Image (cartoon, rainbow, N blue to C red; front, side):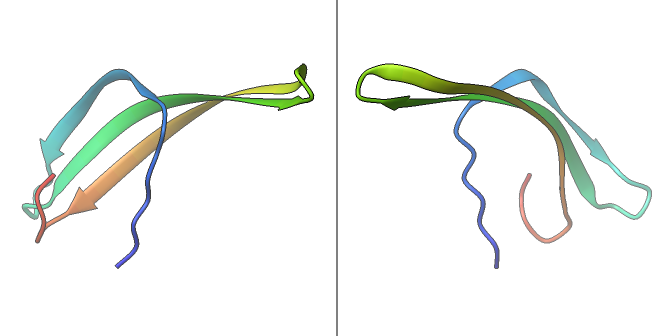
Length: 61
C-alpha cells in the first residue's frame, strides 16, 4: 500500500462521482507554497498547484 501526505490547501471542494463500473473517483485541486531561507534571507519561493484524482472500489473515498 502506498501512502501520500499532502500539506497545503484545497483550492476548490473535491468532486466525488461514481463510474459506470461502480468505482468512486474523487477529483481535487490542491495548492502549496514552499519558501527556502538561509540565515534569515529568503532564497526561493515556489507556489505549486496539483490537479489530482483518487479512485477506489474497496476503500472509502
